[in-house]
Image 1 (spheres, helix red, strand yellow):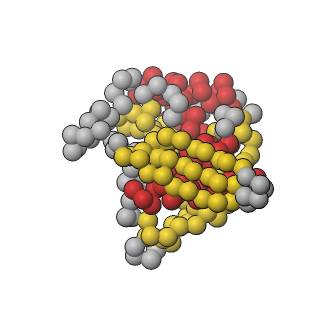
Image 2: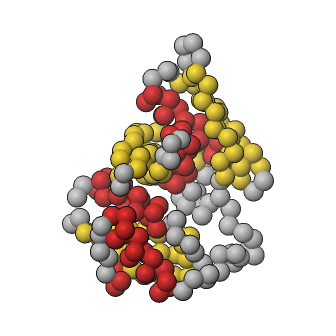
Length: 214
């Protein structure tokens, strides 16, 4: 299985797992097309055995795929409090506005972090690919306003695919940090009928943990 294809499927599976009660984060590891490890971070509201059974039921019901409980590992933390005593911070989507005009499209993405609003703007052409790319760029512009971590960035690709009968947004980003180190990140999000918001979520999925917002 090609690396990018495996990463897309892994992210899609992880997103389904994170819908389960008590699950905070997850990572699905492939080897030669087979799932060899599923790592789950959960809160303490449910037992690890319950979460493992839920994951097995999820894969059987949604993907018709049997998962051995031995490949699933569950780590639990008290998610209500971090070591600092403060709740975990992450970007929250406030608004996503795409305004199509006569010869261009104006995009505005508003994100909030710790009670502060950050607004990113981007102009795009009228074709769908440029608009999708513009939404990703506007999202990153909002993130840059809130963080000194990112120095430069680029959107390498934005596309949609179908998986398990649902439309999935896939965003590939390249970011350069202060040390002039370039990294590529991949993020995904199910559309749910709102492609623009799905792109914003995919961008945040790609970068939240990379810039310290868990």
